Length: 430
Ligand code: FES
Ligand SMILES: [Fe+2]
Image (cartoon, rainbow, N blue to C red):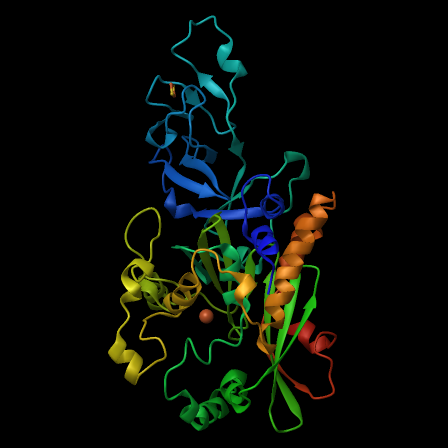
């Protein structure tokens, strides 16, 4: 439970708010490279941390991100002409380059230096891993790009997507690190009877999750602060003198990395559009082989954790709040808990179902929520520290993001965080 004031501090991301200033110390993924496919192509509206911006790919191929409104009389530059090295306002023709300088002002005489005094907000853009990233903080504190393993694997080993989600970013992060919900939200109705089948399957595949996940329905949760954020371990008793551990990571300031298969990894980013909307990113990468074409095709159509999307620039999910996620009550009665198709969409239904900003002063947290409590405390603590002049260390060292999540079997006596084998499965090599 958080007080109303703490909840506001956790959730509000506009310029000048504690959390908003913290977020602005990190590089932020904001669009796919393919959202802006060609030089001098169509500009795209972008809202990030409550700021109205427009992105365009200029003649040289570089992507620029500038404020949406023209300095002259506030016309919308989204309607601007993307032409030869800049974006020109259609109202009176003022033209801006990617650094926010006004480079042409046809309304003034040629000898006027007025244009040299005009500067609009512009943010630097990096293109990496098929994703456009920006940094919106004070230039003198520019952080390091997070060195995710995803960004280093060959192009055919990775896939990324994003979708619009209608709720505050923090409740989406909570869903991302909540290991307790998959037995319900993402489960089929016969799951408890399937334990034996899973174990059988596990013997064949040696997949730890299949072998041990269902044996203990009451995992114990442990959570610790780390240099990148918060690590949560879910411990299940195997009944054979060992513990089955699954690790779930929260990485500052909005990433989650759940345990995944041995060679196919993923993480999410929950990037605040404003206080009540979020971009939900899903980054998937393969450690051992190029991704199969048919698999990527399926993801593009919306499967696994990638959501099915309506066509259009805003990546609106096909199954969304406005159409009740196309819930099928018959399926809910007979086949799965939700009656909703898609793991991502099932997540949206509970996260958006809380309302745009969940009232955390009304909740009743239980033993499975230790990681969520720790994550909130970490964000609030780092935001307060920054208010006091103490910058977050994870922003200065992109190397802390160079890791994986996973699961492991340990003797009951082993300590989960200190064990060398745990560190080994979390070590990224690309
Ligand atoms: S409002 Fe943009 S040039 Fe006048
Ligand atoms: Fe989920």
